[in-house]
Length: 330
Length: 257
Ligand SMILES: Nc1ncnc2c1ncn2[C@@H]1O[C@H](COP(=O)(O)OP(=O)(O)OP(=O)(O)O)[C@@H](O)[C@H]1O
Ligand SMILES: [Mg+2]
Image (cartoon, rainbow over all chains, first blue to last red; front, side):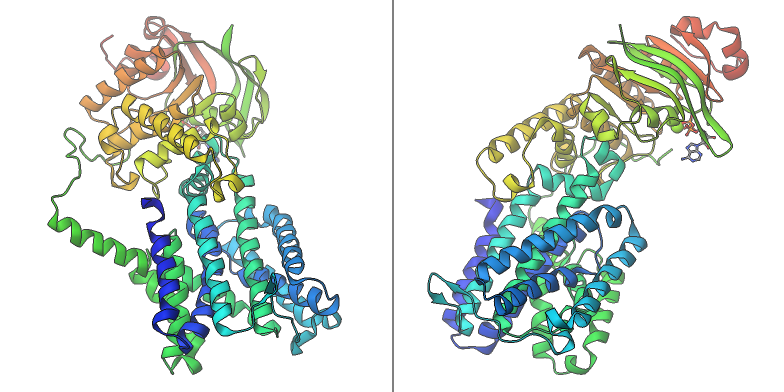
C-alpha cells in the first residue's frame, strides 16, 4: 500500500532500533521522549499545519491530561486507563467550549488567545495546590499496566510510547487523506471558498481543535505515568513554543515532518552540550531561521530537494500548457 | 416558476449604498447576466445570494424556499454554488483535491470514520475521485489533474474554480467575472463552457464586463446602476434600451451578437 509506506518505514525503524542497540540510552530513554513529542507534534500539526490555526498554548491540553491522570490515580486510586479516558473527556470538553470564541479569531489574535489559554492553565496548576500539589508537583503516580503486564522498564515504555506514536500517525494519515482532511486543508486555503463548497467551517475548526487537544491529553496521561512525578514546569509556555518549533522545523502540513521535527529537537539537546544553557535561545533561533530561509520546513524541504534530484534524471512529466499563457490577475 | 426570486433587497456599507431595493427573478435553465459599471454592486449581490453577506432588507427565495441570512454552507447544500471575482483557490492543494473538496456535500463520512478508515471510506473516496475527474474533464482540465493548484496559469485557474463549483452539484451557478484577464481564445472557450453548463440544466447567473461575451451568451440581462435596477430584458432589448445606452454603454461599446 503506497499510502502507508512512510508508516511502515517508521514502524520498521521502531522495531529495529532496540534490536540493533539494546540498552542504549538514546534508544530506551531519549527516543521515548521523542515519541511522546511526536504524538504532540502530529496532533498540533493537524491544527497548525493543515487547518492553518496557530496555537501557542498546546502545552495546556498536555497538562490537563497529565494532571487528570495523576490526580485521579493518586487521590482516588482509580484505574489508570479510566483516568486517561477521564483526561481525554475533560480536555475534549474544555477544547470544545473554548473553540467557538477562540477560533473566530485569526492570525495574531488567535496566537494571543491561545497563549492566554496556556497561561491560565499553567497558573491554575500552580495555584490549585490542594488538588495539584502546586509548584512542588505531584508524585507517586502508579505505572501503567496492560492485562497484568506492568510498564515499568525503559524498554517497555519504549514499546508503549512508540506504539501509541505509530497509532497516532496512522490516524492522522487517514484523517488527512479523507473528506474531513480535505476540508481542513481547504479551510487553510480559503475559508470563504471552503464554506461555499458546503463545508461548515466553524464545526470543522472546532473538530480539529478538539482532536488536537485530545491527542495532547493522551500524551499527557502517558507522560504522567512514565515520569511518576509531574510539576507545572513541564507544561509551561516554553513547552508550547517547543512544540510549535517541532512542527515548523519538520514542515507544516506534513505528518512525517512533525515526527521528524519532534525527533530532531529531542535528540539535539541530548547531543549538544551547549543546549543546556541556551535552550530557549536556540529554539528561538531555529524558529527564526526556519521562517526566513526554509518556511516549508526541513523535512518537506529535503523531500522536495530529493524529488527534484530524481526528476532531473527522469524526463520531466509536466504537461506542456499549449495555449494557456500566464496572465496577470485583472 | 422562477428558480431564484429576489425582492426588496438592500445592503449598505456605512454610508455607501451597494444594493438598493432590488427586485428580479431568474428563470430556470437560462443564462442570466448582471451587468453594470464598477462599483454597481454586482459582487455585493452575489455575496448576499451566497450567504456571505446578510442583507439589510429584502428576501432571497431559491427553489421556492427562503434562504435569506443562511450561512454559505447551508446555501451550498441547497444547490447554489459560485466562483469568485478574485480567485479563491485552495493553493495548498492539488488540482484534483481542489475539485474533490467540491464533492464535500456528495459524500458523508465524518472525522471519526475517516480517522479509523472504517469500511465504506475507500469506496466513498473512489466515488469523490471519479466525480472530481468528471468535472475536470468537463472543463477541459484533465491534463492538470496531478499538478499543484499553485503551479497553474491564471486562465486555467479560472476554469478550475468552475470545475470545483460544478462538483458541488448545483442547480444554480453564480459566476463572478469568469472571463476577466483571459485572452480572446480563452474567452471564446469560456463562452462555450458557460453554454455547456447551461445545457446540463444548470442555471447560470453571470457577472461579466466583457459585453461581447455577455450579449452572445445570455438569455436575459439585468443592468445595475448604483445598486438599483436600470433595465432588464433580452440582449437585444438591453442593446436598444435608451437608458442603458446613455447611462452605461454610452454608445462607445460595440459588439457583435
Ligand atoms: N465589504 C465591503 N465593505 C465596504 N464597502 C464595500 C464592501 N463591499 C463592497 N463595498 C462597496 O459597495 C459598492 C459595490 O461594490 P461591488 O464590489 O459589489 O461592485 P461590483 O459591481 O462588483 O464592481 P466591480 O465591477 O468593480 O467588481 C462599492 O462602492 C464598494 O466600495
Ligand atoms: Mg465585482
